[in-house]
Image 1: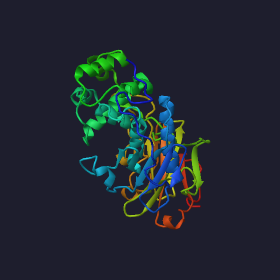
Image 2: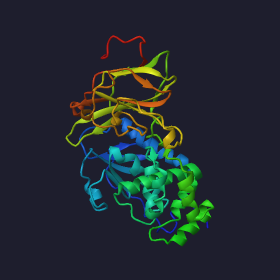
Image 3: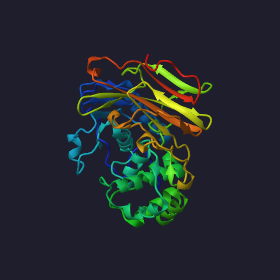
Image 4: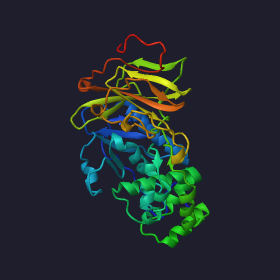
Length: 388
């Protein structure tokens, strides 16, 4: 039996929609309020809106109502989530409202999007879909993949290992079967179903019984899958075009520029982050410099790949600065060291580069001074001033 994904199979009819609170910010797909006095930046709103539009496009299913979201500062205790979780969390989906800090926003928006498909599917698929679509790289070695069967019918809770397993499995499902088929599988499952019932659903939707599906996952899945969606590395960011020996940007980051992302700290401070996608054309030594308070870079994984084929990390750089996942949740400026003071070897490929400014004057409507970011071939023409 096929299950239409416009409404959850076996779920009671959705109640009439009633706005849960007063909206402070509106986009095409979102109604948003915040739990802090600072302005929520247009870059945050644009990226979250893009996440929902991307999910709609991938699934071929539009949301009937705007998604309501309450944003909290980092490390806040979200009282609305305490009734749903056994310990404090960075975000939760409490229908019909997403309660979240910025770091968990893309994950919780995945829950909000999938809720009309099925309010309570198999928990591993529920958390796995949110993980798989949040924009992060998902890695799982073969030995770990063999344990997935142990997790299929268990509540995920806040177990990081099971979250990672669920995200990698669903990311593989998306790669192999696509979003529409994965959502049909999602819609046909429920907590408490038996192994035989799940096997029948797998055979009906995917054409393979549960045992065959798990065996195929163990043997055929790649160790790493790139992030997908606008939060992912190399996607959803402004592109800087390469000119001669490098790329550069100069300008002011402001909350209303449509690109800068605010990080709202529990102590009331605000950080601005801005991201660019840069395609480095040639493997060579480069100098990466910025006049901003901080910066970070990420080599974007663009295709599924096994551990043995991963490009080498850059020698001498801390892992927090360099990786294959996105830095849309970059570490605080205080945890970083000055950005790359020596030439480094960058392999040809796609990168995300970030710069950051911290401002205590944000509440007064004043913004950081002009900042610049350069990625230049070593020995190329240098700029005299690093501060406008």
